[in-house]
Structures are given as structure tokens and as C-alpha cells.
Length: 265
Ligand code: KIV
Ligand code: NA
Image (cartoon, rainbow, N blue to C red; front, top):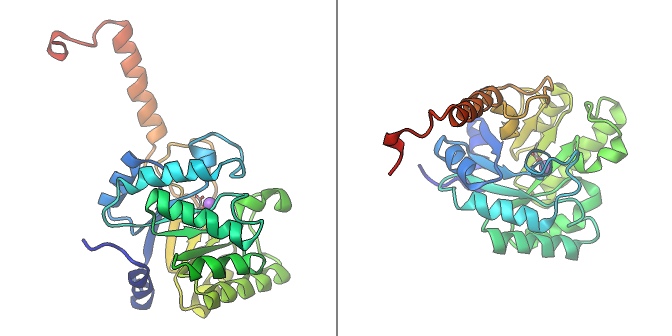
């Protein structure tokens, strides 16, 4: 299996081969996902939720993202690895955005970065791309703006927000982004963007008519229990499997059936 590049992702769109993407935050999981054939691994700032237990993505720091990203990189042979610029590491100005990006690239060895927004962050995207770093856009429900939205419900249902999203997507493409994530928007709008743009559009809660799909790995493996939005398909119920395993271990320790002589020296 050859290493995935932005050029291959572009070819996949042109051939009609869908792109598979999942989040990853640590070495062990990245090893499994990479070997299983996931095309793109996203070191998402959703680590703030699923790894650190915060309610939003806002608290996670650049240092923490770099720790997760460098851990993931040690487990990857084939996948293209994208790292989220966390809240507060790029919104100030384009110099800050470039400095944060360079830290991620140098200290983790990742292949590209993702940041949330359109026209507002144009200058930052231009500078990051000028430095030779692939940039993935992210439009629709952008969780770093949760306190602006006030809710995690579907975005761009109204015409004005939908038109702004299409304009932003076109701008991101024009600037040179290699792909865009569309989160939680109507399928018809996502389809329109995927058909209008020539770069790959990766959806999460954006329906089937886009060029690829992304999910948070803890959600699709059923490690998280309560989070059950309509767009989430669970491919395993690891919460239950892990709970059973751990309960059995506790019982075996209490009852002294672990360890046996065979499990001792
Ligand atoms: O941080 C994340 O997990 C993401 C994906 C949901 C796209 O940005
Ligand atoms: Na994210």
C-alpha cells in the first residue's frame, strides 16, 4: 500500500472513489486505523471532548494537539495525517496561524492542518499555503464557534447561511485548500458543494453525495455511549465490550482466580 498524498485524494474524487477518514489521537489507535486502510487520519480537536472530557473543543491547547499528533504519527505508515489548529492558535492574525502551523509540522511530523472558517481566515490560509503546508477547510457546524451558534443542530438550513457557505467553499478552493470538511448541513447543500467544487469534500452529517466521510473514531466504535446523533453509524459497541472485560477482571482479582500459577513466575 502506497502512502496517501493530497494528489491521490484529488485523484480519488476524479475517479469517484470515496475517501475514508477517521479521527485518531494516540499511537495504538492510529496503528489499527492505518493498518485497516483508513485514507486520512484527523488529529481532531475533538480530542478535547473524547480524550480530555471537556464539554467543548475550546480548551485544548496547541501543545496538547502536538502531543496527540506526534503520538499518531508514530503509528502511521500509509494514511495522510491532518491536525486541527485548536481554538486560539490561529484566529488572532495570520502570523500566529503560521507560527502554530509550523510548530505542528515540525514537532509532530504531520502532513497538513485543518482550520475552521471561510472568508474570516483567508489571510491565514494564504500564509500557511505559502509555507507549503496542505490546508483542509472546515465549514458548516464549526464546533469552535459553538457559543456563537448556541446549539449543535444542523447549520445552513436558511438560504443566507447556505449561500455564504457555498461562497466560502469556493474561496477555500480558490486559495488552494486541498479538501474541505462539511459538518452537519443539509445533504442537498453538501451535494451542491461537492458538484460545484473540484477539490474533495468530506462530510460528517452531510449526507451521501460528497466525496468522502469522516467520523470521530470513539463514536463509530461505540466507546462513547450517550452521543447518538442521526448521522452517527456505530460499527461496534466497545463501551459494552470494554465494560464486560473490566468487570470480569475485577471479579477475577477479587475471587483470586487471576492470576493462576501459569500466569506467574
Ligand atoms: O475534531 C474533529 O473531530 C473534527 C471532525 C468531526 C471533522 O473536526
Ligand atoms: Na475539529
